[in-house]
Image (tube, rainbow, N blue to C red; front, side):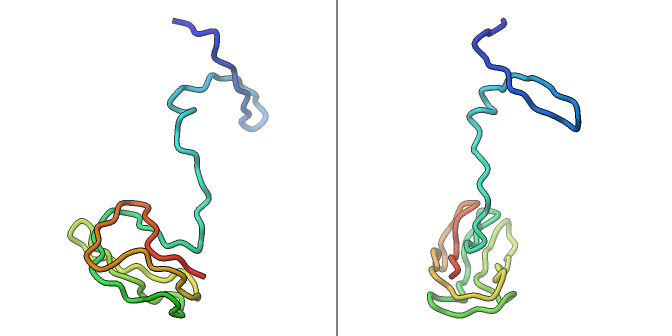
Length: 106
C-alpha cells in the first residue's frame, strides 16, 4: 500500500544523487551523541568490584580507576589521560548498565 504523505529525502553518494523515503524506525532512532572525553562510561553491564580513586584525586594516564566484573571476567578501567577526578558515580558492589557514567574527570 502506497502512502503519499511520506516526504522524499535527498542524499548523495559521490556524484550520484538519490531520493528516498525514511522509515518510521529510522526517524525514531536514538540520535548519535558525540562522546564526552571527560566521562568514563561502561561499555558493558557489570558489577563494580573495587574503586581505586576518589573525588579530587590527581590521576595519570593509564592508572586503574576501578575494576568491573562482567561476564565472569574482571576488567580494569584505566584513566584515558592525565587529570583530576571530578566525581565518582559508582561504589563497590554496585551493578551498572551499559553506557553508565562511572567517573567524571576535570
